[in-house]
Length: 544
Image 1 (cartoon, helix red, strand yellow):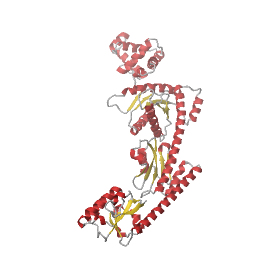
Image 2: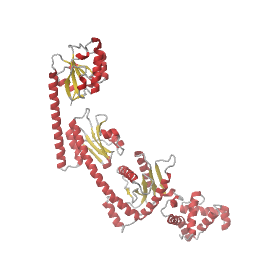
Image 3: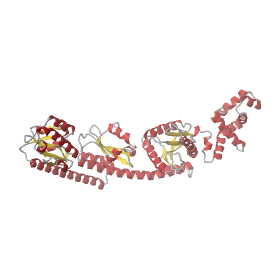
Image 4: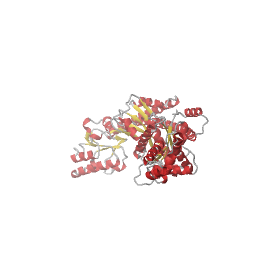
């Protein structure tokens, strides 16, 4: 395949040969033919350049203009890249309207010298095309040999960036952020426009044009060969400083590299999925508390590439609201987990993540001993980023901080209850895509959404009343009795004071102590309900 510009040179046309369409001399042609019949275009193949005297189209002078315009239209419909006309035999010059129409149809028209025979152009052009094809075949063979040597030598996949650079003689980058691949044949700044362009596409579902044509020309002499997996963008091969179309053998080299990179991506993904299953098992060990010793736990963490922190809060999330996801939700959870993995790969936070026994996503986020605010702030930022990259609903529940590794199971238990509460928003009008509930936000829901409401009610009673009874024992106080009376009189300070034979300000003081100890305000509607449940459980025999 050569261009019209190359044909002018090879065919021996002079510099003034271009009569029309000079802007389209880079159009490519597959061969050269000639015809001088009114319907000769019917037997043309796309890509054939046409030589003609123009005789059939100018039998009558007054119709030459319309005849040539019709010829241009017919050739353009066939896919002819251009034509050459012998001027002086039947046509002295091209009418202005014909030149204008040729420009409109992007049809280069050349002046064919009178002294030349058709074969004077056809033979050297065909020979040139054959030689060029032979050269491209030789180049392609050399490329296959080069990549064969790369494979047989067992070179690392990262070396492909240098192989491509040697073959194409242009700056090359291989960028796959999901696998932390950022290999460059020459120094490139991280803020490079091509990287930023790829970053916007990574993780997204590949549009139809990308699936059909993964090698695309962008701007400023940059070509991008998109790397896909399951029709989602993983990264790209970036070719810089090429201000022309790529030759066929250059495309072969790029496609060979893309094929080898895709194989390596698939291999690493398989390894990662196997590795993740071991991590999932380790997470199950953590949340169930089924381990012999702390030393054994640390050793197993090291085996899966994790370093344990001292304290964690648990987060349970899913792309669907069901406790045990169906196949579609499970697949969506895997994609969600991959998005989270990609985001966390750029963070320094040692987050533990995987799937729990219900195939929901489980995150364990490190927290300091007495402050979980930083961990929750990180979670909020993480989920904001996730929501910006995948516009689909996500349901998640967040447990509280419980000290040491032994507290992970309790935090996970709370996260599951919070998750069920978060799914309650499904179907509500104008509901956000991100449905997040923290255990601290729950009131009666912590019992309603528990697997064992009775056990959760006892846990609530212990949590709410334990500190109160401890205070009464240590201070010889009457906080628990005061709370009981206050609830019996439906929150009436005066009646409670009369029944306890104290001033109403004493009642208010004791209620403030209860608030300080439990974080619950007995005068607040929802908190009062929680305390009522706790007192009810207490009245049935619970001892703090």
